[in-house]
Structure formats: structure tokens, C-alpha cells
Length: 148
Image 1 (cartoon, rainbow, N blue to C red):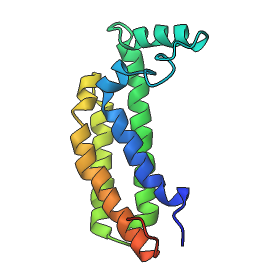
Image 2: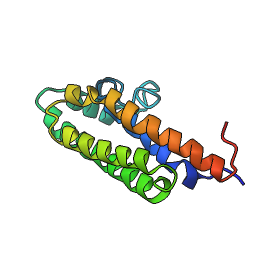
Image 3: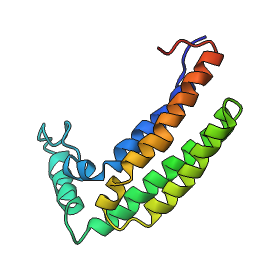
Image 4: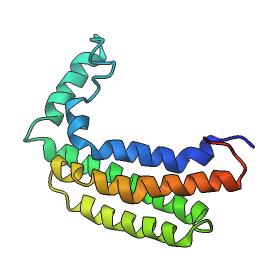
């Protein structure tokens, strides 16, 4: 049996969400990977303007709310995938992920700054990402898919 995109979706969501929790890096490195570094003559000025606004104290709240909704949406998807795929593997661990996810959603909702969100990253990594990874590996073993 082969590993599919469907199989790795829970892990991919965890990795993407964990990256979103590093909110300061998101702000400071916004589009620095290629588009701004290459000085694209069409996108560069627009992205530079957007990056300035993203890092502006006066506009931070607008971006913060959008950032929070992206994190919350991803956690909701992770909870749904754990419920549908992994509860039969380890009910207790799955339920812990679900309750931790709900707690994190509440904490993200009440975050007042990007810094508040960044402080939640270790909790997300330890209670969600690592637990989902453990269930993913067990799921793949039972499916007889070699992932290591």
C-alpha cells in the first residue's frame, strides 16, 4: 500500500498550523522567501506595502483577527480528522487531542496580540502535533504503509 495525500493531511495541517503559531516570524518574514527577495516589479511594491501594514501597530488588530481565524479553522479540521480516523486506534489519546484542541481554540480566540499567539505554540506542538503524529504512525502501521 502507498502513502497518499489523504493519509498525510492531519500531519500536514499540524505542521502548517504550528507555523502559524510562530506569529512574529510570520510578520517579520512575510513573503521574504522569494517574492520580495527577487524584487518582483509587479508584486514587490504591493507586497512591501502589505508587509509594512502587517507590521504596523495601528493595523495589527486587523491582521491578528484574520490570523486567529486561520489557526482556529485548522485546529477544527485537525479535530475532525482525529475524530474520523484515529479514535479507533487510541480512544484516550484521540479524546485528549480533541479536548486540547478545543482549549487552544478558546485561548486563540482570546489572544490580544501576535505575541499571545506565539506563546501557545509549545502547547500546540506538545498536545496536538506530537499526539497526531503518534496516531498517524500507528494508523500507517496498521494500514501496512511504510513511513519510516
